[in-house]
Image (cartoon, rainbow, N blue to C red; front, side, top):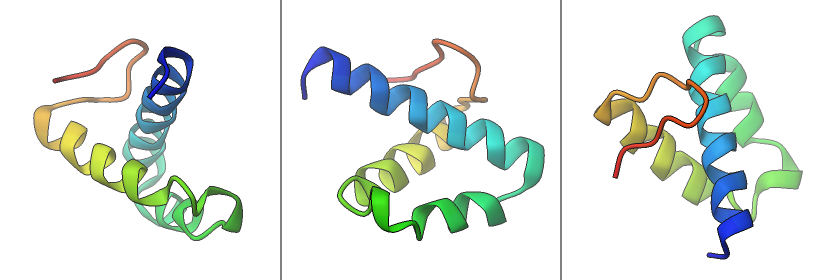
Length: 65
């Protein structure tokens, strides 16, 4: 994954975590159903689950290896 794409992905994961914390998981699940993101859906789902498990709260720059 190129650096720009990697950072875009991480930003999107943090955004989804923040949405879930503020509005619940329903809007996140609706986002995952959008046709426009189907090519990256699995990677997003995996990283959202992993980052939440590691304690990521969706704050800017937050990422756990």
